Image (tube, rainbow, N blue to C red; front, side, top):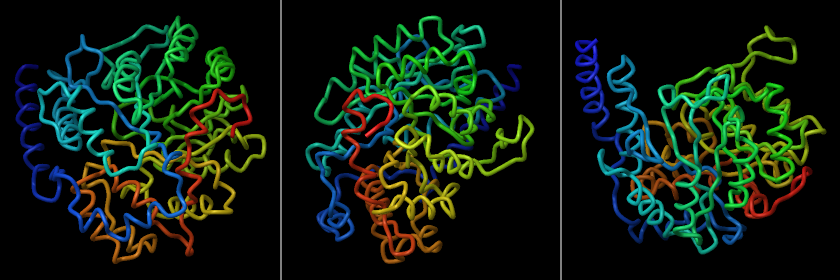
Length: 411
């Protein structure tokens, strides 16, 4: 095993050296030069939008501390997964312009605050906690956990700069104290609850979650749940089937489906447990089209412009999320930061080739990204067009969605 770990270590270092090639890593340039800060794409991105209402509802916290800390990422040291996990850790740190070994706490928040500088007053980021993997008996399993961000850590991070930060808790529904923890984080000011079912070992369609959903509905806390294939973290992919979230909707929970389920295929569970494999985005769209879910079901735009997700699904999202579109009030913007800082994941040139972006916009957007991935994500989404239409300002103006404890029925 020691020999295998040594080979894995060499492989991880070599993989990182390849990724450090020019054009593949975040150059982490300074503030935007005047020519970019005043570029028409940036100015036009704010046309018709109320800055005081703009929220980025999907911003990850990332800690690089040890397993005894409140925020950590497991590099799976000593296992056959080490090369991939260690390379992944370094990629995440580079995306946030941090070096390994910094701990990534205060430095990470300082980087976020710096990136928010070009945004007007009122713009806020929803920082995401992330609970550990729990087994079927509700026992926490750190050995099966790749990412962990404690609720209290997230709450303190948000409190450090309330003019820019809000936060979302993460509570595994199998925990014996799940409802008590939901009530506690609600008192602490959490604006939502975040899950990645595949990575955390959560079946959203399990009857055992009913009491948890009842608590979410009672507290008015929306659930932001990943759906579709999960590639950033390991786990059981079938748990990300968007149809599994129907149970939460039926209990009156406002559900925000992260990434609009724009990756991978899942079983059509409406046709039975062995139903045909179907595009996850189509399963999500089916749920959105059901009148019973209006006012409860929403789609989150984080990562939808990635190379692996863009295409027909993104075209449909833009068309239906445009002014007057039937999804106009049901889409919620988020950046999925630090992922916009991972250069190979996004290609303005590809979006231009697909007719979703004017070719002349690709170069300036790429230049903005080298300085400020957060602004890049916002300006890109405000610039996208399908059939001559762009995303409605309402997609970005979500302060009211998160700031009030609203009963089922939504905004």
